[in-house]
Every structure is written in C-alpha cells, then in structure tokens.
Amino acid sequence: MRAPLGEIVLAHCLSCGFTFNRCFDPGLVDFKPGYDASLVYSDTFRSFLEDVAGRLIGEFGVHGKNVVEIGCGKGFFLRLLCERGENDGVGIDLTVVEECVEFAGSRRIQWIRDFFGERYETLHADFVCCLSVFEGNRKFRLRSRSKSACER
Ligand SMILES: [Zn+2]
Image (cartoon, rainbow, N blue to C red):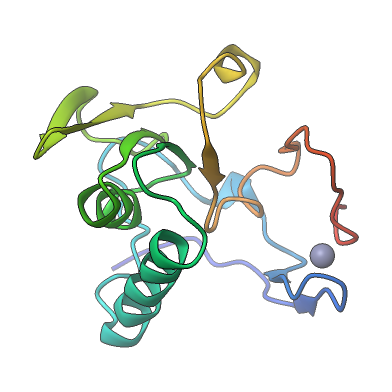
C-alpha cells in the first residue's frame, strides 16, 4: 500500500483541549468520494462516539433537533445522533459516496458531497458538530459567539 507520508508534530491547546498535528498538510490527502478516513473500526473510538452521542442527547437535549455535521465522513456519528436522538441531520463531506436523503425511522438525513462553506450558512441547524476536519481545512472558521484560543 502506497500513501504519501507527512510529518507529525502534535500540538495541544491548553484552552480547549484540541490536539492536532501542527504539520498536517492537506495537500497530501486526496479527499474524494469513497475516501475512508473513518476511525470507527476501532472499538475504543466507536465506544467513545456512542458515549458522546448519548451525552449530547441525554444531557444536552440534542433530541428532535436539526443537526449538521461538517466533515461527516461515512456518517457514523451523525446516524447515531439521528437514530438515537430522533434528530434530522445534514452531513457534509467531500468523501460522501452518494448524495441522497436517507430515512432513519421518521427522521431524515441528507448527505451532501462538498466542502462546508458560505453556501451552507442558511442551513437551519440547532446543533452543529465537527469531529475531525479542522486540520483538513485551515481556512475553516465557524461564525460563533465564542472563539477558540487554538485557532491558527
Ligand atoms: Zn483551543
């Protein structure tokens, strides 16, 4: 298996806890439909996501809402939030295999193959999540009331 190699220098933000590869070079990664960046093959990571989804739904009221996941990959986490929390979802990722709408019970999930950008500012979202695309798009900024100290 041949893959381009890059340098890894981990950095950790003491303000928000975000840990990232300071030397990540998005030019080395060919994000295209079907590219599999999923970490859910790890039982530990899958358990972590299930725990986070359960806490978001149970403790933070992400239930019956409109959820947007930026950089959804194959959609494991978004499906968890929608199926368990009876939420509608929109997943946006360059690697989405097929743009479509799927149904999880009475709830719908729309899959969009794209970078997140200004054209999606009008999406109605009660909750926006983004698990692991900050390194992939250095221009990525969410307009929010709070600003992370680790923005580069
Ligand atoms: Zn930070």
